[in-house]
Image (tube, rainbow, N blue to C red; front, side, top):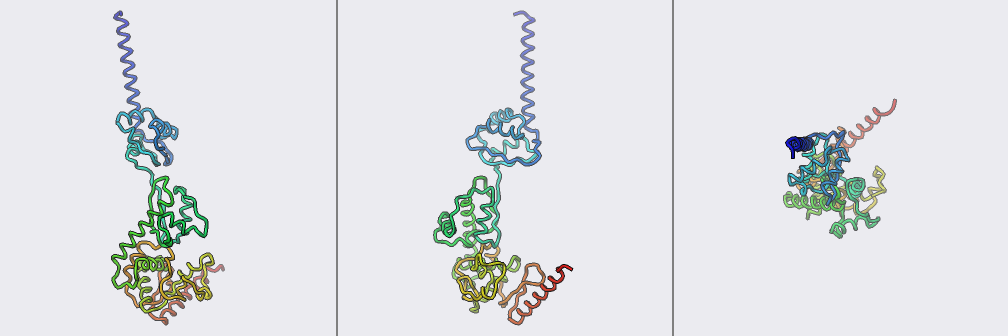
Length: 349
């Protein structure tokens, strides 16, 4: 080989080497380039998907500009096999390197479902079915819906009302409604057991089941947290003196679909298991899903001589408590006068 050809070959190798180095440098540099997404993108890594397929799909979404460099970096770093399946949320500005580490660490997107204090079980089930991130299992047809529900949860014979703790539950994509319900029931059981173990020793309730029933009534009577213990104390006082609970929410619950927003005298007189105007003691089951605050307040009721209460004219959800019927009637009159005045002020002129 002549000296001229030798120089030409060396030059070509050097040029090729510098070109490859440039390609590598550009690829590595792209790993730290923030994504130019206009909004967060949800991306699913399918179980068993190859990293090459994941990279191609990310490129199609406009998330990774240089998918080959992303895959090569993952393999070079021994991270390719550590990418975990699941649903991820990619925020604008995330770099490909950051995204890779997010997938390696399994920082999957967590969805949420909130059970509201005071909901009935049916309200909760309706909300579950409306949640697009929850996988719904086939629903049983009425009238077997509730009994079949508890059987599916491994709790045959247990009435479902009150058996799920109101709070926000976080879950990954693919979670079923039954899985969430098991979690909510376990949370309720833990909260109730703890409250019962730490209850006021003078509490005139026989077991944690009665505590849950009473707590559900307390929950429905007030949305003001500061009042829960006082309302619990009022109902405990009624029990202690042999007075009927006379709780409107129990009557409403017993009316079911017949309730149209108003309780009439005939409803209060119609005897039934949930009519605490006609029957002494607690109703047979909870009437709602009480929150942890209501359960704790019922386990530690405030000592009070009040046996009556009515909505306060303050219009803040609070109540006026009275120890005598005379004072209660005066409080009722004051509330009604306030309502008339309010209606008159709001009437069109």
